[in-house]
Amino acid sequence: MKVTVIGTGYVGLVTGACLSEMGNHVMCLDVDPAKIRILNDGGIPIHEPGLLEVVRRNVAAGRLEFTTDIEKSVAHGTLQFIAVGTPPDEDGSADLQYVTAAARNIGRLMTDHKVIVDKSTVPVGTGDKVRAAVADELAKRGLSEMEFSVCSNPEFLKEGAAVADFMRPDRIVVGAEDERAILLMKALYQPFVRNRDRMIITDIRSAEFIKYAANCMLATRISFMNELSRLAEKVGADIEMVRVGIGSDPRIGTQFLYPGVGYGGSCFPKDVKALAMIAAENGMPSKMLTAVEEVNEEQKMVLVHKIVARYGEDLSGKTFAMWGLAFKPNTDDMREAPSRVIIKELLARGAKVQAYDPVAATEAQRVMEGWAGLSYAEGQKQALEGADALLIVTEWKEFRTPDFDGIAASLRDRIVFDGRNLYEPELIRSFGLEYLSIGRR
Ligand code: NAD
Ligand code: UDX
Image (tube, rainbow, N blue to C red; front, side, top):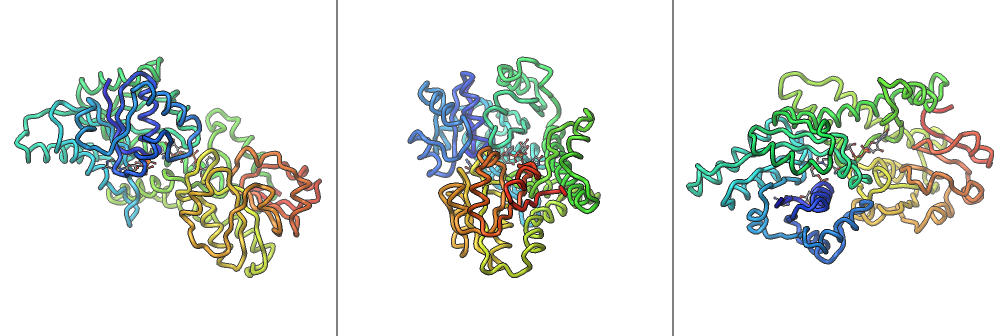
C-alpha cells in the first residue's frame, strides 16, 4: 500500500521504516530539513537500536523515502499517518498546533480519497478537530463533496525497544467510523498481528482515550512503587523484596514495578498532565493523577536528598561522577530526563558533576548547554577520576557488573548513590564501598 507518514521523529520514523519492511511504499515527510538531510544521507537523527538497518534496507529496496515536499507527500499515500509532536501547553494540556497544521496541509492539497490516521497522542475529540480542519480546507477549494476518512491509531512503542515493539505489538488499537478505513487498517497491520485477536477496533474517542489511560496507568504504578520505596526505608523493609513479592501475583504482574529516580521521557510526564487537564476541563479534577505527578516530582529529588543528608546543603568542593544521563537505557532522548533535575540541584549547591552516558552525551550537551560545573567524561572510568562519590541514574547494561575495585580505588569518599538499585548491597559493600540505593536498608 502507499503510505505517507507526517513527522519523522521517534514515532514517525519507526512507523515509516517498519511499515516499509512489510512491503508498503512509504514516504516520510518532515518540516525539519536537517532531519530529512540526515536521512537522505543514509543516517538517522536518533539513537534507536536496530532502526538504522531497517531504514537502510528499505531505502535500498526503493520502498522508503524522505522528503520535505508537502505536495508530493500528500499526493503519495492513500493512508496519511500524522505522527507529529503534541507537547504540553503552558497549562499542561496537549498542544495540537502541529496535528492541526498537518491535517490542514492534507485538506489543502488532496485530490483523491485519503484515510487520515492520527498516530500522535491526542486528547479525546481530536479526531473531530482533524475532520473539521480537513473539511474546512476542502471547502475553501470548493471541494466540500470530496470524501475522506479519519482514524485514530495510537502508538504504544517504547523508546530503546521501538523497532521490536512495532514489529511485534501487544495490540493494535484502531478507532474508526467507516468500513473502508477499517478494512485498510486491518490489511496494513495484519502482517504484524497474525493473530487477529490482537487488533482492537473501536470508535475514535475510545481509541484516543486508551492511549492516555495506558500511559497514566503505567505512570501510576511507578509513582506508587516510588512512594512505597520511601516508606520501605522508613520502616526497615527492602523494596526489592517487596517488588518480587507483589509482582509474583499475576493480578499485579512484574513489569513497571521498578522504583527509581522518577519517570521521565517524552510521554509519561506530558500524558499525565494532559489527562489531568482533560479531567479538570470536564469538571472532575483527578486526585489520582495529581498525586502521580507530585510523587514523581519528589522522586526526582531522592538522590539529592540522600546526598544532602550525607554531606549537608553546601556541596562546594565536592565532585560527583554520574553514570547515565538519558531518561532510560538504549536511547539518546533527554526529554524530561531525571538526570537534568539532579544535575541542576547539585550544581546549585556548589558541586561539580562529571557525567558519562554511552549515547546521550551529545544530546545532553545540547539541552544543558553552558551549565557551569558540568563536564562530560569519555567513559565510566574517566567519570570516576577525582570524584568523591558516584551516582547511578540510568540503568545501562554496561553499568551492571562494573569494576568494583576500580570504583573503590577512584572515589575519594568511596560512596555510591544508586538510583536504579543495580547491585546487591552486601556484594558492593564487600568492596569497601558505602552504598545508598532506593528503598533498601
Ligand atoms: P518528535 O518530536 O520526535 O517528532 C515529531 C516530528 O514531527 C518532528 O521531527 C517535527 O519536525 C515534525 N513535524 C512537526 N510538525 C510537522 C508538520 N506539520 N509536518 C511534518 N512534520 C512535522 O515526537 P515523537 O516522540 O515522535 O512523538 C510524536 C507523537 O507520538 C507525540 O504525540 C507523542 O506523544 C506520541 N508518542 C511518542 C512515543 C515516544 O516514545 N516518543 C510513543 C508513543 C506515542
Ligand atoms: C512509554 C510507554 O511505555 C510506551 O508504551 C508509550 O508508547 C510511550 O511512553 P517510554 O517513555 O519510551 O515509553 O519508556 P518507558 O520504558 O515506559 O519508561 C518511561 C519512564 O519510566 C523512564 O524514565 C523509566 O526509567 C521509568 N520507569 C519505567 C521506572 O521508573 N520504573 C519502571 O518500572 C519502568
